[in-house]
Length: 117
Length: 113
Image 1 (cartoon, each protein chain N blue to C red):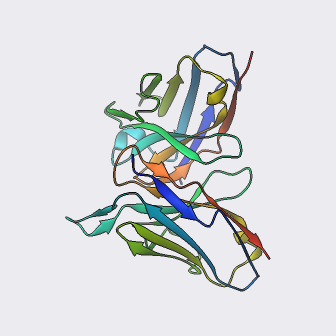
Image 2 (cartoon, chains in turn brown, green):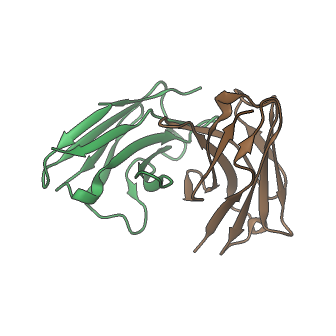
């Protein structure tokens, strides 16, 4: 059974860079066949797809965030990562990583990231 | 972007009754070359990540009870929950994966009447 676990700081200051890592177990990112996505959910709100990466390093980002987002993969560690630069309070959300067939079928538990000074 | 609009925003149904949630996309998510609708349904309970229930608009994910069913094609879709159980209380989302950026509906909150 594939499992995903997000990790990273729960508090980020405005204008800084949010950095999260997703560790995958029970399956290998480098096996191919799936995309690996980041999705966020603002408090009490709906879901926003941030972007995905393939094991080759090919990425797609939501145009609404594209100028600030970088998703990378480390197949040796079976991890993929999210960086979101120049954050504001509007980036406060629960961030999920997911295996994306598409659609996303396995999700991490999510991690709350709060942007505040 | 493809805009996904769900109705209603909230719904209260008695135990054992049927719940129906609708989802409309701003453009068709039916891919003509394979005749598949790129539409999924999720269930999210408080403090948990979304759980995939249905994909290809009508295919149940493994382990999902058969009281959950999906239907529709093109731009109009429905999630039906027959014989509502207490554990079905949740927020339900539709998602299109026809075109990036993949987009979700705003969610429908299902409660027990």
